[in-house]
Image (cartoon, rainbow, N blue to C red; front, side, top):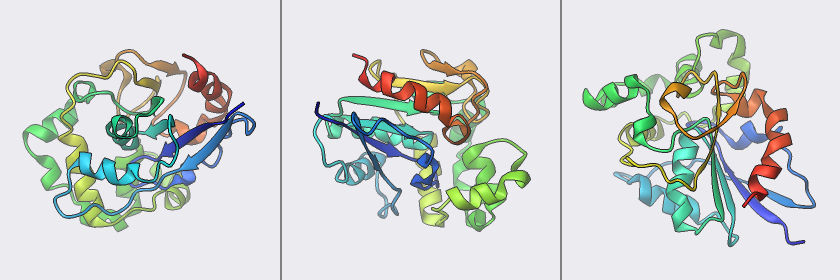
Length: 220
């Protein structure tokens, strides 16, 4: 049986270490981990997706993206002719954004967000992972948040808030926690719910994902 090649894209500012507990049966799947790179000057999200897509070396690959990485793999899906696109803790269109993100677009708040404080891991952790109990988890965040460059953060914030996809792609498979505080499920339609899953469930709900991802990937 030919193996299914599965490419994983982490969330905003995060490294591929967030997938370290994800395990797929090695006789059926081969896992490939993608990483964020610095954007070029004035680079569009589509052009950035084309650059990252160069790292997808297999035909009919499955793309899995977390949070902003979920937005990116949706842009990449058509470029690489992906077999399947799966997003986790993310959104399928800008209609699924919470009100605060829609407001940020209206008042252009992304232009004044203090991304220069990115070396302040606590601030970055709140934005990337959500929640207020970050002090207990700072060591965890220092491990997982690798892209703290101001240029990247300015670019990423603007690109997600200004994402222009208004209609979801019905083929995208959406896995979402019912306790996600960054993208509250009340704004989201058509997703596979994970009970008790927060925005960081890729880390702390890995058992559910390991049990269910193989079936979800292989389903027609």
